[in-house]
Amino acid sequence: MASIFTKIVQGEIPCYKVAETEDCIAFLDILPLVKGHVLVVPKREVDYYFDLDDELFEKVNHLAKKVARAIKKVVPCERIGVSVIGLEVPHAHVHLVPINSISDLDFTKQRVQFSEEEFKELAEKIAANL
Image 1 (spheres, rainbow, N blue to C red):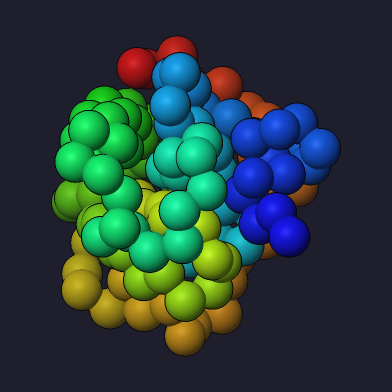
Image 2: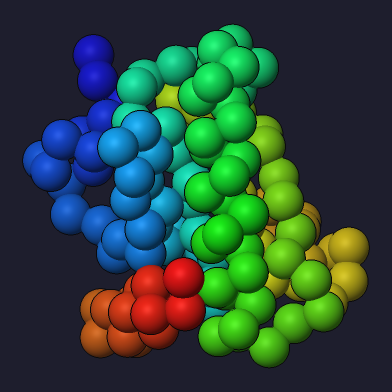
């Protein structure tokens, strides 16, 4: 069965896209830790991040670097934290999270909520800064 990310890639489920290449897509996490939390996902469904072939691994990380720089221009923060957990969705992905302290990357804390309009506006601002 296709993962939720595969369904997003195939257009079956909408997302707040910030960037897309031939091989990868980046979109806002709909259950973000903080404003600006973005997921970078390879379009090919591979469960475990370190099972990505070298070429796709490089492409995911290249897009993550570009998107992280764009997020930093839009969301005030000290850094963009990077996390690869791989337990919540069986499809490799990278979390890009604006942080000011290490505790900002605590995935057990309550997620923040935004309106559809807030998500759209944020996605557009990040995309415009790529």
